[in-house]
Length: 265
Image 1 (cartoon, rainbow, N blue to C red):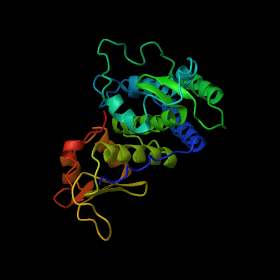
Image 2: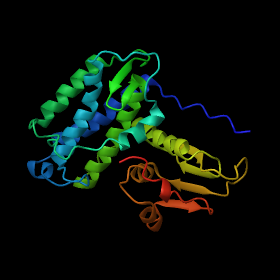
Image 3: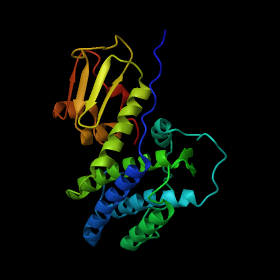
C-alpha cells in the first residue's frame, strides 16, 4: 500500500512579506552604490549585464503589484500550487527578441523606489494572503507567490555577488524560504525515502524511490549549504563540480542527484 502523501509545507504570509522586503532592501542599498562601469559588467545570465539583472530584480518584485491590479481569477483553488511553480517557471523560455530588462528604465534607483512604494501600498502588513493572483504560470495564492519572490530575490542576489565580487547579505528568512521550496521541489519530483538530503539549518527531505530509511543513520545522505543547494537547484553550479570542490557531500550508492538537477533555471 503506497504511503500517504505528505502535506505541503506552509509559510506564514506576513513573515514572508517581511523577508521579501528585507532582501529587496539589501539589493536596493547595493544598487545605490554601483558605478556605471559596474552596471555595464557581464553576468552569468547569458547576454544580460548587471544593469539588466538589477532591473529584472525590481521587475520581479513589481510583478506582485502588477498582478494584484488585474481581476482576481475565478476560484476557489489556484491553477498552480507552490510546488508546481519551479517546473512551470523552468518551462518559460525568455524571448530572445524581447528588449533587455533595463532598456526603458535608465534610472534604476527611481525604479526601485517606485516598485517598493507600490508593494507597500498593495500588500498590507496584515491579512492571510489567500487572494488569487493571475501570474504568468497560472493563478496562485498571494502567500505562495510571495514565497517565489524569495527565490527570485535570493538567487539573483547571488548572481549579483558573483558578477561583481560583492557581499550583498541574505536575509535569513528569505534564504530559508528559498532553500525549503527548492528542497521540497526535489522531494516532489523524485518521491521516495531512500535518500536524505540535508541543507542545514533550513531543510531536510527524503527523496528517490527504494528502500525507505526509518531510523538510525540513513544509508544514503546528501548534505550541503543553503547557497550551494540553491546554485545546484538553479543550474548555477554542476553536481560534479560541487562534489569535486567539496561543496557537497554524498554518501551511499543512491546519493547521486546529477540526473535530477537543476530543478529550474
